[in-house]
Image (cartoon, rainbow, N blue to C red; front, side, top):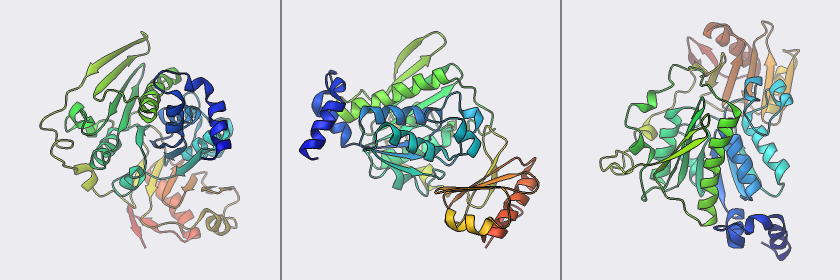
Amino acid sequence: MTVSEAAELTRRFSREALVKGIGEEGVRRLRSSRVAVIGCGALGSTEAELLARSGVGFIRVVDRDVVDYTNLHRTHMVGEADAEQGTPKATACRDGVINIDRSIKVEAIIDDVDSDNVEDIIRDVDIILDGTDNMETRFLINEAAVKHDKPWVYAGVNSWYGTVMFIEPGRGACLRCLMPEGFEGRQASCDVIPAIGTVTTMVGSIAANLAVRYLAGDRPEPGVLYSIDAREGSIEKIRVERNPQCPVCVMGRYDMLARRPALGLLTRVCGSEAFKLRLTADAPSPEELSSRLASRFSWLISRPNYVKVITKEGVTVTVLGRRVVVIEGAANEDEARKAYNEVAEAAGMPVLVDAAPRP
């Protein structure tokens, strides 16, 4: 950091430097820190925004979903234009962070988080924040964090209630200590989880606060579960003891990391009427896709990270990055497969036959 950069940092974060537990040294620590936010919806966007405003120097945001109108009441740094265009959440989050502070390095990854990529996503960061909406991904993050000795913050919301816990491998309980085996199957029914923006912002703020403390050198106590009742305005702190028989942080068993992700399978997106597909091979670049599809489809949106078309049946097919496809407006799986195949054939991507990819 140059002398002029250091002076600008001191000026910009002068109020933050006055806070006990941060100071000028904490401001410098935050600027040199690297963070991964997994999930860029209501929780993740709150966390990313607050980390950016706190001066974190590198933020990696990961999400495979797109913005829609149901997200706007609780998701930070997005607006109606993002919902109209179906902007990838990771892209919208990245752009929001850049609008706050252009000197922050932001990496947006448009993809599912699974056993194939989670270790690469978290390997070079200082802390991980949970912005996800399902337990399976959280348990996967927990295993990767424990394996690579990375602290992380678990956060979850349901209706007026939320939970947050700072997890530091070797210093206290991990997520598997808190929740025994079997919890990863929760929410498998794809029920829509009720949520309100005030609650997700409150929970995301507590999660980001714990991360800021850790990064600034004021390490929070690990294994303390914050139980938030936003309707009553109460927060209870519950001590979670490390399980001496924990299969993850004690025995070093990483069952979720050992599972192979389902590729080339069309599945319904939890909490919506959309379908998703993770390709078995990288699709052509968005620029190549746009060129191939423009003559076939009259309605097309092309951006640096995604391409969206509408088929003649009115089904929307969005290719995000090079690996994820989201199909919206299909009445059932057969219609979704038909719409995807129409786009895939024109784009030179694998087509689906009976839910299995054909090279």
